[in-house]
Image 1 (cartoon, helix red, strand yellow):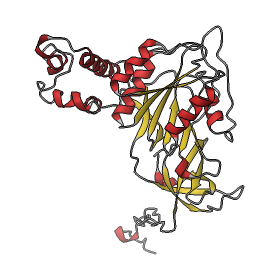
Image 2 (cartoon, helix red, strand yellow):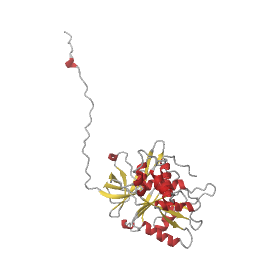
Image 3 (cartoon, one colour):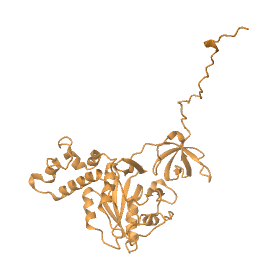
Image 4 (spheres, rainbow, N blue to C red):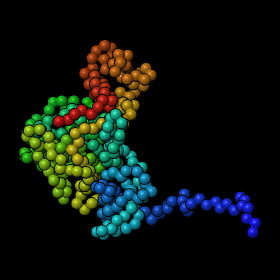
Amino acid sequence: MTPREFDESDARIRPARRTRPRSKDRPAHADAIQALVTTVDRGRTTCITDGGVIVTAMKAREMGPKSVVVGDLVNLVGDVSGTEGTLARIVSIAPRRNSLSRTVDDAAKMERTIVSNIDQLVIVVAAANPEPRRGLIDRFLVCAFHENIKPILLVTKTDVAAVPDFLHEYETLGVEIATAAIKSETRERDLANLFSLLNGKTSVLVGHSGVGKSTLINALVPHADRVTGDVNDVTGRGRHTSSSAIALPLSPDLSPSQGWIIDTPGIRAFGLAHLDSNRIVAAFNDLYEVTQTCMPNCSHHEIGCRLNEWANPDGVVNAERSARVASLRSLLELKDSNPPAID
């Protein structure tokens, strides 16, 4: 028997393993309903629909790494009944009109968004215990001006100590200052004034631990039941009582027309490296027009900066204008500096 000769036709090429090609078409989710994110905790998001139904949801895989934060308007699909044990899916996030973010690491410029879609940034400081610190206040103001958010400086514990004089300097920036006594006879009046400022708005409270944010929220929103803490007598630091941001309705019947108040964990450092200096300058309407006549790439700290002429017309120092220029320059310096160590 003559041995058979093999040629190329006898070689069997193993076909490449193939999977079904992934379709580029994505579901339209035409039946999705819109809801407001009120808290995010360990991968589970609590939302409230326009009809007042509280729904627990998780982010859909197709959304990728995009984060969901308190204040976001999201679209939900799946079980949106709000029944205990059910879980809906977040399939998209509406464009944010603004956000409150901080840089976690100024060297790497890692930005972390805290809340979004807010009307007012309420910077809570205590008149004493703990003492107010200018550095953190200025950083919050930079972010508020950058995002076109109305800032309000709220001073608590005014029955313990008087409002520090340096806080009144912020009034030259157009920052409204409110007070809130803790136990004195003016407490009810202060709370009424504060409620009128917050009514109908979405406001976020920020500040050190121990300044009284949770105490204020319990007074303004009796159904909140926020845990409160004390200030350590040795370190002067407040104890963290809020572990994550949460939005609470000012009205117990969840009426959105009454507004929302967002409580945040106490913050000890607030980096600004992610911000654009030009937008900070643009937040000062009167100064922005002056800076447009400056030399190209002016740092606004130079001798030839036009802000110097504006603050000293005809060589005469104008105290009010000089104060505004000094405030702007201090904010620009903060933007490029590392977050201060806050004890």
